[in-house]
Length: 269
Image 1 (cartoon, rainbow, N blue to C red):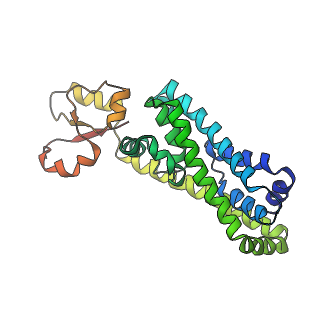
Image 2: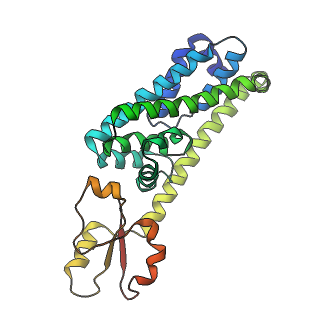
Image 3: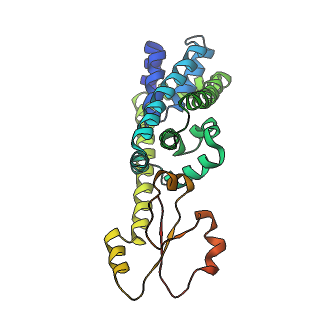
């Protein structure tokens, strides 16, 4: 933490830019603590709050624009890549597509507050051919609210932040080691949850080849249900022949209508 403070004081705005860019590009390094510290330093007159906010918004816009144009060029391939590298088990493309379909570009206003959505939203907007200008405007507004809230919190509670920093400083390398351990533990826990989620998912999965073999038979043919979102179907209109189209949120209310004597296979994005 002391090293972060020294870097903030020494390098100031470029350090804020770098931390925000690293997080928004998809790495599991939280930028909020840096923004809160920047706000506390601004309250003490050691950093300019408006410039720090501008740097955070600019870094976020650049990182998000990269993902937006990758999504525009590569479509679902980029979305699947983002979903695989994310450390949040709940950041699957399906949930984000549903949220985006309901709110459109307005969802970018609070995207950075939702775990997983911050990284998925920009390429999703690009894949769904959102207006580049509209994307930049809503994304900038969302970044300003997110970064502004963090910097503002640091300015309001700067005395409490100063006391915490003084305590960490009094602990010396021990305090720095505890903070580093906490950060590494957080990242390890998220990856553990991700691994556990994927392991449980594999237990109930059937491969493409296995499904093809089942469909080639004449007995015990499974019922295939296409639960992709409307956005996913628009991106790829192909479907497994004979499959039943059903929105994911409608499965529960249609369970009684599905045959009980056949195996049911769902497929999504």
